[in-house]
Image 1 (tube, protein in one colour):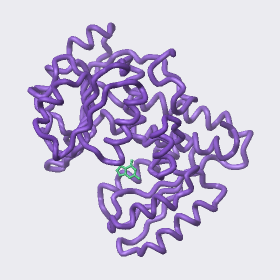
Image 2 (cartoon, helix red, strand yellow):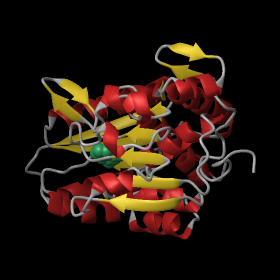
Image 3 (spheres, rainbow, N blue to C red):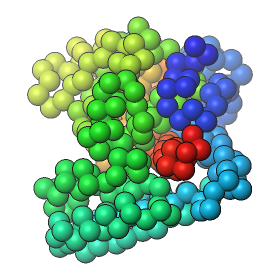
Image 4 (tube, helix red, strand yellow):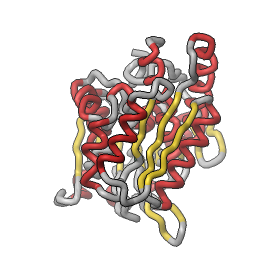
Length: 319
Ligand code: GUN
């Protein structure tokens, strides 16, 4: 196998290693980057994925009646969700994906939401459907996700796609864990036989990340709010992924020297996004660390684009 996740998901993406990045400078040798506690920046990986997705869409254009189409459904007016949706739409336009958004009021009933999803399921110009979470009525989430056509489920949240990932035969993998796999692969971080600790057991990040790591032959532990002595477990990690949304949850004493630390947490502090990791002290100890912002965030959107392209190719029989 050429690299750790080659061929497993999004087969059209290349996995030529990136130069190592430390802050804004490029470090010549990987060992030098590791000695400095280098930043794992998402943007260079995201830029490459977006370029590849854009080129592939352009290449396929003569073979298809329509370009790929992504429908994004946003219920309510949560400002953070509105920003995420806008960013997703802009990213789509840049690579040639037609993005259609449907904004529904916060008091939308379940039938109306399901009707909207059904409309996109039946629309041959739409190849990906995403319902932005959380919904103002969380009790509608499971039914909404289950009503998305599995082939168009670009979030990879439908039970059928969850089952495919569980089996190790993934179709669409949730974009944050998929992005983290790309980041690790392009920076040549070995996963097989590594001890991976994931803090946070959400359906969006923690659980699918654990399955991805397991399928790459890591020894995986998932921790959550009931975990006793979190520090003792996290200190064992060669790769530590935290996805909780609690500022300074991960302090330097919880990190093994030389560990790779992936920070998926986002908390707004005085209008500024901060991660779960106590950044400066952990940067001194880790070999590689994703910053917030600028780490995992850009990858999530890039992998959504890659998933939309994958759904498009599958639906059109171009895969
Ligand atoms: N809310 C936070 N992250 C995500 C995501 O990846 N997909 C959707 N649909 N909603 C989210």
